[in-house]
Amino acid sequence: MKKAGAAAVILLGCAISVNAQKTNKLGFGIRGGLNLANIVQNGNNDYASEMKPGFNAAVYVEIPLVNGLSVQPELQFSQKGYKSSGTYLGSPYDYRANTNYVEVPLLVKIVPSKNFAIVVGPQLSFLTSTAYKFKTPNAVYENVVDNENNDLRDNVLGGVAGIEVGVRNLVFSARYSLDFQKNNGDGSSFTPKYKNQVIGLSIGFRL
Image (tube, rainbow, N blue to C red; front, side, top):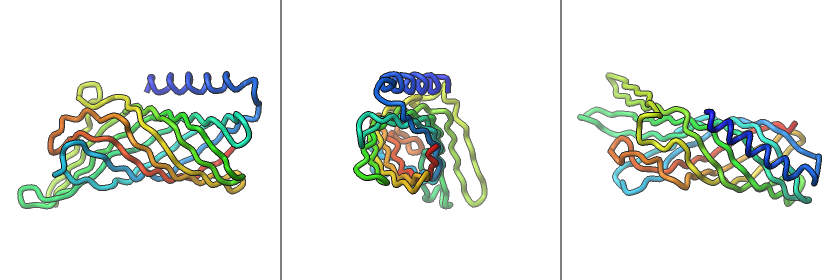
């Protein structure tokens, strides 16, 4: 969390400082919505995963550079992970991996028309918590992972691309994000090596 906060402050400070002499018309906003999270696996074709719903929430600042082009640093909380189901020892099961991240996207915002925008750019994600849940008809097993003592990557570089539609002060957003780095899992049947991918849908308010 400390790393995420420091990175966010440095990122926002640098972006605002670079742009200070160009314009004073900064825009601020908040947004929140639904994540549809899943994984892209590496080397385990026998493991089937499904989308898992989660939550996202963010604050951001929009820094105009020239007409129709802005830089938009953000600070975001994002729930990721995946789920799978099958049969274990003759009984059906439901397995869910829940991972929470604090993220710092640095996006370029292209505005071809007044109420429509395209955003794209890199994103640094900081893992804050991990939990696994294994459920059968007769029992539920839950495990909260100590992120300081496992082989999961604490911070991951990824990318984001999406669109925004504005209606007055409301902003409707649809995004796709993908990790560029693997989670560094052990590649077992329950913790495969993977990259996070998320479809994010949100509604925001521009201040």
